[in-house]
Length: 213
Image 1 (cartoon, rainbow, N blue to C red):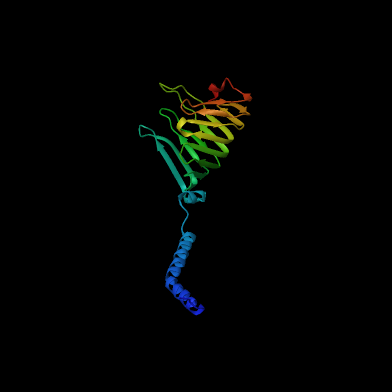
Image 2: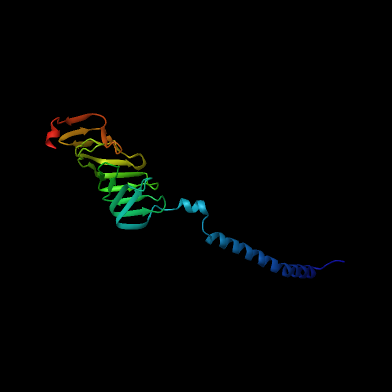
């Protein structure tokens, strides 16, 4: 039986009408997939890549303290403005002032114009007009007398867990009435409360300063 052209067209049209719902549904599925892909949020790693270094909170006249294993204050950090960053938990501090405590010894104070505390709370960078100050201490039954000490530099790094303050910048050290200058920095040991200068050191050491203090 031969089919004429009209019958062929009619059969094709009927087949198309039968398949039309499936075609429409397929297009709808593709459209839905495209919209979901277009509007969905990036996955975790992508979000981490675009995380910005922006502050999540700021405290004026803020303070941060830490205790030693005996429950005594080990150090205290003060700042006119304390800015915390969410991405790395670091802290920027305006005019930071830090006091370091040791049993049976006078507290040591370090300060600067600007400060940066890392997210692990282990390193404090003191930037611009940085100072280490230790007042004079009278002799006790266990500790000899010590003179007033003032160390000045453009930068100090406080290694909090190690009780060390160091710099590789030029430093001026006043101890009693003695004054010394180092071109390559120095290191202050807070446990021993002693300062070691590095590199070329010049200045004057007054051997009669005990009578003047």
